Length: 91
Image: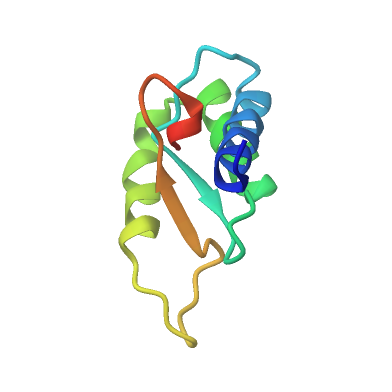
């Protein structure tokens, strides 16, 4: 298994752990500059799915994804990847 696929699976597992459900198919996951999953943000996405109406958070996450990164305005999340609907390995 290649490194990116392994990291994608880790990110989806972090979201699943936060959600407390394994039937959740995340649209996107957070990764740092090195390509490692962001434990905090992925867990928060899972918790939001578990405890709140996640559709309310999606516009914010899409805004993070589209925000250009500069040295002055570097977001906490360096990279977002879109996830496939049927397999966490496509994240």
